Image (cartoon, rainbow, N blue to C red):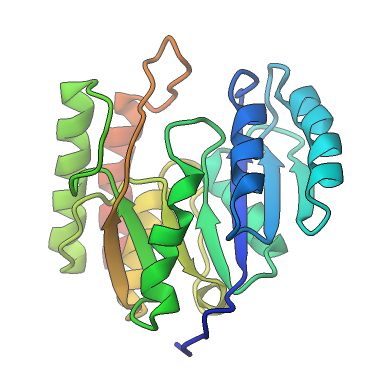
Length: 241
């Protein structure tokens, strides 16, 4: 991988699915970041009012932040987060890409912290870890245990020492998309991404981040079924292409 200077540009890819209560606030938070040059929004066939909220929000964002390139794409059916991310990746133009969920669990103010290892020429990929000491909301024990178990299994196959494989915050040099093709449509993207950047020899860093988790009543979507599926994806993408 080639090193870049401190003039790196940043694309934020935002998959959206049924986030009408949080997406407007999140989009404003992202646009306010001094690191961001481009926002690629992909609605994965939301069944609530998310699309209308996004469209209304974009009008004000484009007026308030004319320097930003903001694009909005809509899927014709619900495919899953992985497919929404692939749609966004295809449209990304900046030097660096970061994944941002359309809720308020992850804080866009932490983009500079994620970018630093890349700016310093040390990393090709940076994970924002919820388990390295940043402040976080205290929630579900079994989710915590599931995340740790999936990370452990992923590490055993990839020979990495990550603390949080399942984190949303994955920032990477866009050029890795020239060499790596992702296939997962749903939450299998997380273990697939980790397996493939490891196989590609990318330099991987982790930095601590804050985490403001949601309850299911507040809109959390991932379930135990996604966790079980992730185990199979870990085996599939580490042992096969």
